[in-house]
Amino acid sequence: MIIRVVPTINDSYSKTDLKRRPTFFASLKPSQPLASIKDIVKFNDAKINIGGGYDSRTGIFTAPWSGIYIISSTIMALRGGDVHFQLNKNDQLYTGGYATKSYYGAQTINSLVDLRKGDKMYIKHRIGASQTVYGEHFSTFSGYLLSE
Image (cartoon, rainbow, N blue to C red; front, side, top):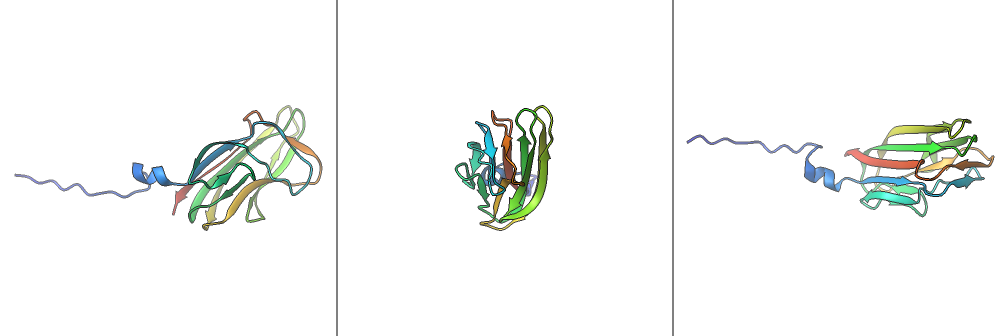
């Protein structure tokens, strides 16, 4: 009789591990005007929110676990306008972005971020001039835990 021992692999791609990882994806339904440098984009249609870290009322993702996250956002400007925006980590600039002045110009930013439980990430306006982020689900904000 031959007994074969199959080792248990506990890698980051196992199905049980992936089911519990904090993950979010939200899009902007109506267009959102940004008038102040303090304005946060509130991606109000959370399609995925595993772990409950994203708050669509505030537009802020709060890390439920510590680890390395991939955070991404696409911002589209409204009809010939432009949008200066930035990804913030705990009220500090992390990555800047600019949706160019063209007919519905857009930019996507992708960042790897080392977050501690409770750290906050969000997209905010970067200048004081009035600009509008185009909605209709063309502007999005997402992230997921890559590794602990």
